[in-house]
Image (tube, rainbow, N blue to C red):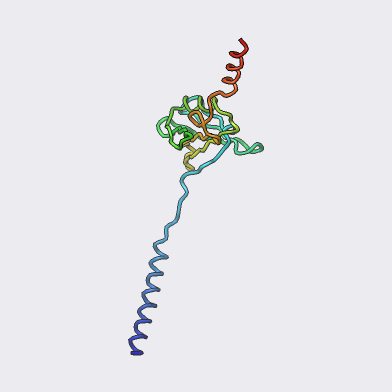
Length: 151
């Protein structure tokens, strides 16, 4: 009986050491390929055309970072207040950014580290409305309503 227990323990230890060796050799090195930034909309300057570059300032005292955009590989996404998303053109994305209060919106920018090329830009309103959750051009709409009441 003692011999069987000793052999079982020896076999268990041998198996454990073999599994440890295989586990160590199976580890892979993770290579970071993409970066991501979460920014206030006021810190982002969009390109004038879809094959241009986005200019980003991560903080008031930070230098600007320039990331390339490419019509074929850069997606512009608007996250709606209901949680759904719309992939839009750069022109539509820029129009939506102009309609919201920049302090009330975030832009998430994802890019390839090796080429510094934007793969996706997401516009998210913190308060939620319009496409992004906020009524478009709030101040202008309020002014127009006030002017109508005075007539």
